[in-house]
Image (cartoon, rainbow, N blue to C red):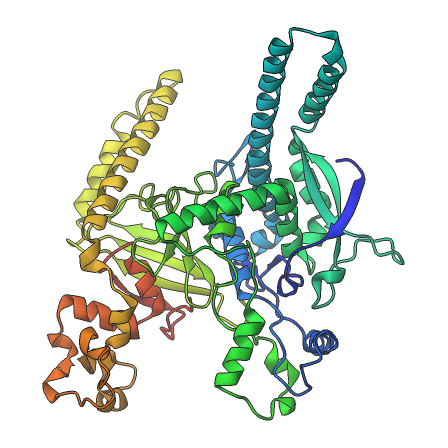
Amino acid sequence: ANGRTKSGLTGIPHTWLNASFSLSDCGMGITLKPPKPEDIEFFTWRQQQNQDRRQSGVLPPPYHCRSMTAIFSIIQAMLLTGASIQGDTVNCTKAQIPWSELSKTQREVEFDSRLKDVLAALIFVAAEASLQRKKQAVAKAEEKARDREQDEGGEVAHEAEKLQTKKRIQYMKRRLRLITTCTWEDDPTAGMPQAPDGPSHRNVQVATSLTNIQDIELFVSSNLRDFKAPGGVALLAETIARIHGAGVLEHMMKVSTSEGVSKGIHTTSCLISCTCEQRQRKQLEENPISNISRIDAAKLVDTTPPGHQCTSHQLISLLLTGKIESSWKGWSSTGLGFGLLSSNHGQIGVELTRPEQAVWMLQGETGYTVLHVTDCKGADRRTVSKLDTAGAVLEFSHWNSWYGQRKQSGLKLITAGAKWDPRAKHTRKQDSVQHHGASGPNRTLRLLREQRDLEQSTSAKARQQESSLEANESEISIKPEEVKSAKVHPDDERHYPGNHKMWRFDMGDLEKENSPDDEDRKLPGNNWIPYYRLTARQKYIADLKLGPKIRGILWTRWPNATINGFTPINGEPPVV
């Protein structure tokens, strides 16, 4: 890396400026540290200085943005898949013990090394995309120079112009493998990088330098302390943004927005648009809180409204692929190994719902979380992320990086269909070892061919299964209006709390719901139907409305699967 070349203001929202990458106390994964009471008090005071309309005694403003759970979930998923830079690409083939199989002591020892690999891999994805754009620009400049030289016929009058063009192309080639990396601007008094310390991003400065693509891991290692300190998340986001460049990002956003409009997909005008304060003020207007000044500051560490609206698929696709996509379809995080699921049927493309490894980011109501398979019965562990097997039993571990929530949870999923036959497992095992007598180069070639054939066969079957699901999309897709129109009998809700399968439901009539005299209309008694008499679709709607939210997400990938066995022992489902 060269010395620092220049400094500039960061465009990261202030609710992103105090987050760092830290290992949780249990040692299982990445977590966002909560603010201290003194941080909340100082943060509130600084906000009062910047916004005179805020008065003392009002609920403190959001300290962290929940949309940052997207970044933390990406890091956690990559820890689980083992993604790292291998040669001139990013993949999950590094020979190391999987993160989930390490003991707590081992994870604490290896956390810095694994975090370095993950951060370097994300930066490399951006750098590789930038390199390809630069190569295209150089090739275009050389072609344009050759065409101009042929047209001019080598006239002496244009020799100076040709020399200038040649120098410009040489300059472009010298910078092909150089990227812009960021560190915090030095504190003039201490002479050390100064991380952000307040709610306003207007005074936060970053210093930039040029780093060779081959030295990305060295850059991350040298600045790992800054990534683990407050401001580390912002430093990563700013570095990736500077690698692409403001002009390139603006162009990709315009293209993405234009394509999204043509597809009828809502897109945002910027990668990060934090609306946490506006949503908090709206909530306070609708549900005022009194005597907030008497509440201990320690109980106000989380005043951030739930949701992930501050980011979109555009930022996540940029981080995972180096490109800004117009939707969740048509792209994947192949080299990183994990996928993504949401509660909206058909929103996510097959490339993300069926990833290389059994690790998924979950897009929930409160933010992003991570889910990965820890054990499976009745299915091939190598292909369980891509292929569905009827009656398979999958055990999952769920991770929530947001503070104030249970970090790790467990659950069990039984796919719909026939029961598991133990003989199927025995047959697959015999098939897998029937040629093990060979050795040497021939055995290596055979194993490579078998691996290639397995991947091709798995991909073909996965596409076929996904096509079958898409064909039945109208049968399994549930509109939000259908869930909202379903009503519960108040007496049943009172007599059988928490057990909606004992309740009666009125599934509603959307046409009558929208009629002008709906408020004055009294529902007839025969509209109340016990749960056991509902149709399969109506039960699906009732379960989505009243069951665990994670169930609605998992059903988009494994329709009608049985989901239970929540752990810890209290049986509460994880928060998503």
